[in-house]
Length: 115
Image (cartoon, rainbow, N blue to C red; front, side, top):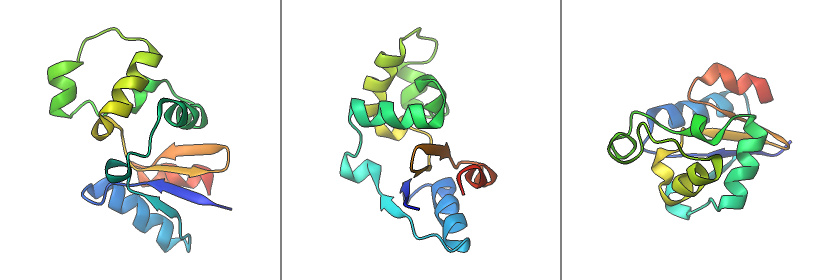
């Protein structure tokens, strides 16, 4: 199986998710999405489908940018996807992808759902 992790090296939860995979003997492809401009609207939409959630459920609501610019706004899923692509630090992390499934691994036990 081919695992990918959308990772932020500066994030404790993201580092924990990567360590969890490595402890299970999994060497995922690491995508540092804040550096690599990894997401397009199409690719993020595909990941959101694999996650089985709405785009707004992928938002880090504790981020200052979210609170200042977007909190309380009623936006469509497509609008949220555009915002997340333009502001990837607002994306919850890490995202672990395996084939046609993905999970947000900010709670490491959720990673077990795709192992």
